[in-house]
Image 1: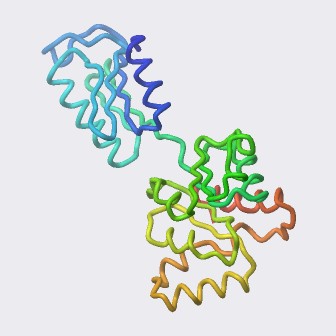
Image 2: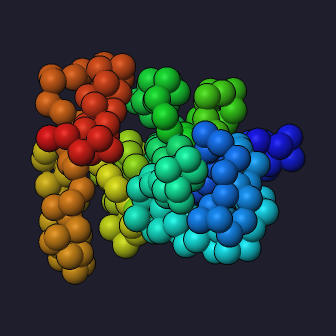
Length: 250
């Protein structure tokens, strides 16, 4: 890869962008169907999810085929390869950003979860309305800290999507976070609280018209039942459940 493309790839990764990379691989400098020379071995094309293109094989016809496969790769979220001849192959791989772990609540439990998650493949986002708790001094491992005077305003600044994991460890009797998240996409959403407290919140949400299917999709009480008591134990139970969903394990 040229230095320029290497820097572009690193920049895209740092920005948390999704993209796919096609790499030319061949065993000889034979012709492709006798029509045009094999491009430089190791040359690459990068296609981002928002349509930016970097690099070329040096041949317009081959570029078109590679671009088609790159788009398929991004759409299907599957790596691929193209065999042009017996001696020429193009390998296509996805580069996905680390999924967001949105921790709503900068309590001791939120801090314990963030500390443990720092060793995992997540982009950690802390959300709270309490500046004395949600700050870089307490959460040096966080990739982002969103703290506003009102929790709902802070939540409105978060980009929720189907790949993010939401952990609500705010006050158990405060339904603002879960009420907001019910209307947002996510791969996982869990809420801390006792069964009685969560039952009371759920009953209130039902009376207000919250869809039952969305309520059932929320993991509450959060985490696997391991008898967790301390913030650290709750963090282990919570992230074990998050990883089970992420890795598609029961």
